[in-house]
Figure 1: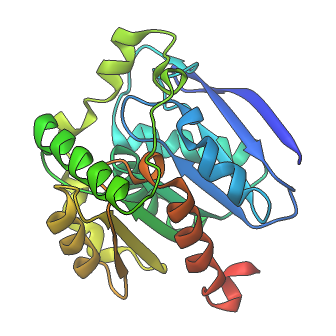
Figure 2 (figure 1 turned 180 degrees about the vertical axis):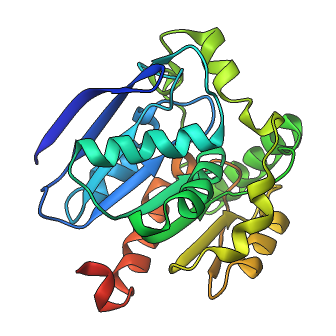
Length: 253
């Protein structure tokens, strides 16, 4: 497998980015959940990189990336465009999880010509669900999986490692600023999949987002709480691969 791990200079920051898989394959750009670095995608990326080129990065101010300001979804979308430029990717299937799904939506609106298709996992708009409610959903999902004889995802401390923890916390507060673009998600015009766990408190909002995006497909991920790529990486990798395989032929040109 071909792997490239780089640092990319961006406006008022430096982004760590990684590419896995053959550069000739269809590119997928993965965007992290809040408070995680790009390693949180490892299990999903390892599976997908056998068929696709998988790009991921540490959001500015998180993981090994550095930045002192510009913690906004506009800037996060611009950073993703810079990462794609660095790896020579003109158009990608963009996949965001939870907080990263907000960036994915902003990228879809800000760079519509750079997008082949969109996958939104555990997505919401507005204020995030209460942490205790999210954690309770994760616990219920784990108990259900245990009863069904399924293993449950465990968080590796390395996924939560940040060069500057205080800056990483600040970087994950972009939702506290104005986000007028949220009213424009109905303008997203590429094939879109929205998938959220059945124990995730974001589920009703995710369904509403799918209904707002023309032609979007909505899936409920069973026995899953908030953080589906971590809890069910095998399921998430499969639903992404299946969605991409069913895309129209012109997506692959």
